[in-house]
Image (tube, rainbow, N blue to C red; front, side, top):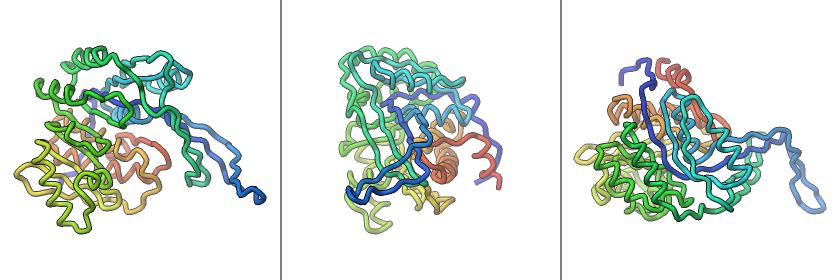
Length: 314
């Protein structure tokens, strides 16, 4: 595919989904209390990042796209931190604060690039006023070219089918990062981007390449999708479309320091590319390169447009 300098300054993307506060507690090293077999880590640095749908929005903004995010946060200090983290020159956040609820937070304890433990706070958002959420989406959709639904099974997208149908009527591309074992709720979407593990949860364990290809084609048909992209870590990504041969994008890098958030990078670059006017094949090509860059970083990290263009033109 032709290499070029790309920019996403005119990419208008709406992100709706589960917001999470990602916290990283860094220790230079850790030791064991031998009498209790207990690891002890002296925390040297703490870093907070927008996670879940927030990481998608940040990815879009960092590569130059214009993004609006709609989601839920709790009425707590973590919610305030997350809201502040989303204050970006290219992100407009429209958040709903749920009273008497904790913001979903994940704390990862990291020592010498190894994750020792993850601590999770709050399993799901308990939210009943979906009319308010849908009203915000309806009022926003007309101003954006692509909709990303970032589903982490945390309660924001319980009525996702309604949102898909709404976007479809407005001829807006709907990209979904799916979760769980019920993919039927995503029927009619423009693109699903499951990783291989999520894909196999739906279609069964694939032991050969031909099984992946056959079942991918079948899933596109069963769910009436415009496209399906299966991300496969060190084995790259495979794109399925109706009545077309699958297209495989080999991984640029075989070394993965941390795949956390790589799926967010993939869907973000595809969304920004489609919103700019690139074809789906071109969008996936760019996303594959972006994922190869970001998996070499530790934690939920993003990349910028300069990093992407540098690798594109090497």
